[in-house]
Structures are given as C-alpha cells and as structure tokens.
Amino acid sequence: MANVVVVGAQWGDEGKGKIVDWLSERADVIARFQGGHNAGHTLVVGGEVYKLHALPSGVVRRGKLSIIGNGVVLDPWHLVKEIAGIREQGVEITPETLMIAENTPLILPFHGELDRAREAQNSVAKIGTTGRGIGPAYEDKVGRRVIRVADLGDARTLELRVDRALVHHNALRAGLGLDPVDRDALIEDLRAIAPEILQYAAPVWKVLKDKRRAGRRILFEGAQGALLDIDFGTYPFVTSSNVIAGQATTGTGAGPDAVGFVLGIVKAYTTRVGEGPFPTELHDDDGQRLGERGHEFGTTTGRKRRCGWFDACLVRQSCAISGVTGIALTKLDVLDGFETLKICTGYELDGVRMDYLPTAADQQARCTPVYEEMPGWSQSTEGARSWADLPAEAIKYVRRVEELIECPVALLSTSPERDDTILVTDPFAD
Image (cartoon, rainbow, N blue to C red):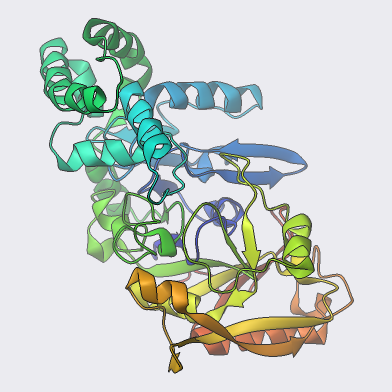
C-alpha cells in the first residue's frame, strides 16, 4: 500500500489540517512527525470547528490510530488539556486511538520561560518565536539532557534526568536574571502528570512496522512549512526542527522505504507569521484584502499573518527539497474577485536574475520579486467540488502554478469545509 507524507511547502499555515483530515478517511494510521504545540491546525467538519496543536489532525476521524512521533517535542500539560477540550466536542481519545512514542522529548515549564526571556531580551533581531518552549526543548534533545516520555515511568531515572537538565538551565537562568527552577516541585508535577501520558506510550517504530506489514495505510503529518525548516528555511527566522519530508522517517522510526507519495500543501497566495524575509509581501490594499478574505490570523497565537502574492520560485524550491510528488492547492476561493493576479517567477539581486532564494540572509533581504500578471475572475470558487465548477480563469491560474513550480496539482481545496475538495490524483493510489 502507498503511504503519504504531508508537508507544508511555504511558511506554514497552508491548510494542512483540512487536507490531513480529508486524507485520513483513506488512511489507517496518522502519524505526526515533528514540531510542537506552536503549530496550530484548524478543522471544520459539519460546521464544527476543531483547533488542534499537539494532537494529529486524524483524531477527529473515528476508527483511526493517531500517533505522536519521536520527532515531536511534547508539552504534557498542554496535551492533557487539549485532549480534555477535544473530548468535550465529542471526540473519543483512548490508548487505542492515540499513541505517543516512548522516546518523545518533553517540553517542561522552564523551556517556555527560557524561550520568552530570550526573546524579550533580544535587541538585535527577534526570531518571532511563539514562546512555547519548542526551541529550548529541541536544544536539550541535541544536548542529551531532555526528559523523554519513557523517563516518566521510573522515579530514579526521572530525578537523574531532571538534575542533569537543571545544571544547564539554572546557569542560563542566572544569566537572564531568572530564579532557579524549584527542583522538587517540578519532579512532583512530573510524577502527577506521568500516568496521564504513560497510558498512551508505545514503541511507535514497532507499531508502524507491524501496521505496514499488515498492509495498513499510513499518513505522515508535518507541521509548519518547508521555508521554516532549520536547515533549508530562511534562517535564523525558522523553527527548531526539520520540516521537510525526510523528517517523516526519522521523526517516527518508520524508515525511508515507508515513504510513498509526498504531498506538498500550498496556499494559492503567500503568508508568513513573525519575522524574516518575505519577497512578495504586500503592504497595500491587495495585501489587506488577502488577509481579511483569508482570515489570516494564527491558530496558536492569534497574530496577524503577513500576506503577499503567490511565490512560485519559493514553492518550486520547497518541492525540490522535499521531493514533492504533487501539491494540494488551498484557499483558491480567497482570490475570487481580484481583477488582476500576480505570480512571482523569480528575483532580481543586484541586477542579476535569480531562479531561487539564496541562502545568505543579506542577499535574501535584497531580492526583489519578478512578477507575471494574469487575469483574475469575478465568479465564486468557494465550495467548488469539480473542475466544471471553476471559472476558466481560475483553471488557467492553477495550470500556470503547476508549470512554474514544476509539480502537478493532486488536490484542490476551495473552502475550509472537509468536502469542498477536488481530487485530481489520489495520493494513496498504488
């Protein structure tokens, strides 16, 4: 059976939640492979709105197994609260429907405190972090001092892990003017939350191996977008994990041969939250219109997203790095009513034409977009479920996007509703 990896191909907020939810009907297992609760997914199902942060988008589908992989950093208190909230909306969460990899790193309260203190004192260049502790938790993972889910099951191991982490963190806190962490209170809090988390703990790599052997379909779900990747994004204005498709295997233990179809989620225009370069950003009425029509406010922070024209150059770059097989083009309906649309086809840097965004930050800042104009359409595309429902100009826009990014459209989304989706190519097809 074909397995599918879903990745964002821009700066996040491309509509991955809806697409993962839509695809999860065809999947047996939905596995989240990176990020933390800084990423938010909004699902609209039958008029009911579900806002997810740590939980995989597949949890709203009955009879599916959702997995939080080891590539995720997990705030246990947030997870328990999120599970309680989703249960109030009628979604059943049990150890049979949700599993957490035993080697998943935990985000602890001092990670968030460090995150926020650093950002507050950074007078050089703010990163735009959500302040939820994701970056410091990944630092501890690489520094071999993080507490992992399995550590919650043994009192002595837990104490050793906490002591090792606090040697590092209390020194940092002293430099930032923060009080030392209350060791005993932290250990007590971890022991209290442990039963809530351990009931979901499992050797996820083995579970996925067994599911594959049984012919089950797996949907690997990423968070954020490729342009926020720690290696290939607009560094340092990036997230703290690898976001691209290759992380699906290391973030779950599934192995490279588990990947079949790579689906890149692409918004029909471009948005970005926080700091960093944004070549096609609009500061005019068109940018304001995109933001208002697209309801461009972050699910996690509520921050207003920066908006701009579609950047085919960046998406082409992201598709190449992630090995994207096909894209899901979302929010086409937001472009309804524009008389003229623009697509960025490349950049000019110091008088030289570029067909990719350079790595050096100073060069990124000096890149100016080269645009191609296309006629817009006055008819509504909202809720379209077939090509026949789309205006001819909208179809031409989609086809031009395909040409410029050198990747075909597999799915087309025309509203937040689950069923307002046009299927071109089934990613799960063998």
